[in-house]
Image (cartoon, rainbow, N blue to C red; front, side, top):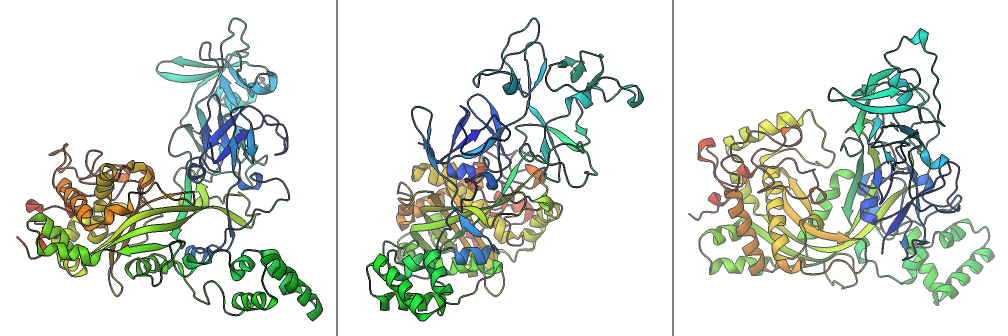
Length: 619
């Protein structure tokens, strides 16, 4: 069973209601929001395709319903558009889709013969079969494959390589008589002198495949956008492999749903009225008292309540600002608000709420009276231990970029025409804990710590990490590296694969200091996770996880090589961290598996750095 499906349509002008081709790829909703989203190249069972923008996600004229109770999230993330769920459907055993699907375009449009190298442009237009494309060479009837290279521009453009222009690039422009022919195969890929060449079999022109090439002024902005760039790009495009990480990067934001929106009682009159924009519109636009009275009676009959109940509900929405009741929130307060919700018990909790916590801090500190050695130090380092029995995370797709260019983030609809953004409601559970602020403050006063961190700070000045919402400090490097080590421990203890776990770092210094870590799992299903992760917050179990994580920070199977590294990973933004000790699967890390260093967890006598455990007062 799939969450949604991609359908690559053969006809350029085929609508969503048209006959589906056989190119159907089941895609999980969580993947659709990240590496299989708008503008990404997706590999199917037989062919490659690129996902169209959100203007093609629903039938023409269809307005997707908004996700309710995300006003706080929208304000915190600075989003003015509505948040809506992507279309969903299931692929049956017969290969048919029940429900909706998302349109995609077969791409790259060039295919080549692995045997003779002959290039074919859009072979699906000349051949009836959706399953196989056959080489049309005189002596060759092999199956074709889509070429593995495309053109990518930092302005966000994506296109096929201009094979004809590349082949004739070294010819004198004044003597070119060979013209491009999109219907007959006459260009060939040829390996020679350890290079790949594009050869014209008509005029024998040939040129090597370049690393960069000017983006054609008549080329489409995207494989499905039949318009050239509004302004001719100044810089040449890059020719990259389809699997290159620079081809596509999604821009997503996530936030937890916390009180008061997490406390909404579903099914109440005010809830039903709030979730029905048509009823609200009718009440706002009622011209006469009689018309308003008829609308109130209709709503009351639908809700099976009295007119007075509807009037009170409307008053709470219109005048009292239900569900936030006038509370304002800006982007800078997002993590602070979540942190405060996590550390303070929620009174009169109901199991049906979307944010349910259970505090184990007293039981955690009580263990310190009977524990000795390193476990005792670990107990003293942790100030609060909280089981998050239920949480809801809202994941929003804000756009995508190519070549790692943050300055040219493209919106999900490409043109800014739609009034909504794709979003998911993810449900799950987690473990949250905070470090003792007094101990952390003493630890981070070591001059050697800041000197060690400054090397990464200087490297980060030339790189933008969109998810980094705090300064790069020793405190952050400590929390981030510790979160990774705990995720690796939870993979064994809780039975979850590390790729399904996520981290959320709460770090700040100053008037409102924070030093907290949330490790959680969240899936697009109201049933939530499989259970078991929240139980790891029980004091006896978490103590074993924490002490093992701290032990793993002191030694790596790749030592002494790992401990002596000055820089590794993208832009050398990792130091003492490798796949054997601190790195985790990419989906789990909020920062792309960078900004990690075990030095901030262990002693380093040469650098005159003490461990955080050394400041607990216990030898």
